[in-house]
Image (cartoon, rainbow, N blue to C red):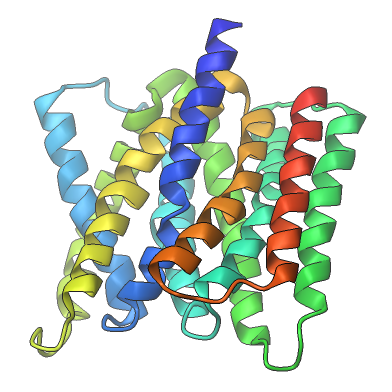
Amino acid sequence: MHDRQSGWASGFIGIAIFSGSLPATRVAVTDFDPTFLTFARAAIAGVLALVLLVGIPQRRPSRPDLPSLGIVAICVVVGFPLLTALALEHITSAHSLVFIGLLPLATATFGVLRGGDRPSLGFWLFSLAGSALVAGFALTQDLSASWTGDALMLAAIVACGLGYAEGGRLARTLGGWQVISWALVLSLPLMLPLAILSRPTTWDNIAPSAWLALAYVSLFSMLIGFVFWYRGLSRGGIAAVGQLQLLQPFLGLALAATLLGESVSAAMAGVSLAVVVCVAGAKRFA
């Protein structure tokens, strides 16, 4: 019971940190190219992870762990950041945050396929209800909405769900911060050169806000948030704790409105509130 409670607490801290990721990415892509942003955040976090692993020696991943670490690296180190950065060139962070409501369903599905979770029927009903609300919202937007941005966000959700489930499963044996650290270090030999090659031709026009956003997504979104998140998934259950992601749109919309001055429509707020209700129901039946 204590492990499950600490898992939910760790998971909530991770989600609170992740809630700032899309607003920060939205700020960063105003001055940084999305590909550079993706490679740079992974490279910076990778260097920090390498320092951690050298300073606090850990058991090295075994050979059977490497494919799972590769999935984590492809999905959450590269895939999700790149796809969301590209999406945010077409849609606002407030709009993109509603798609995060689909993450619990994606994570739970991959948790069953990869992590051995077996949620109840009631759990799936609430999870599907939350996802249906999000999908319905996307489909009822006016013609000014970007289908390109929406498609990129949906692809990002699939990649992220797989990466979360795979990392949560692996964290049961390696530990939460160790999983993301090894995945980042595994990606570093590729991410660092790509970051250098894709760097801006000049740094003169980069606003301080963009630098701060890059710092946030590198330190918090790519490293610190995952320390808490993978610990939560491993202790509280991938499918169960994964439902906390339904809170992320609500927290993220508040940040987008407060920090970026983006408009949050009544429909956006309503959908976010409805999915919060769904997470409570899913938690009860998990």
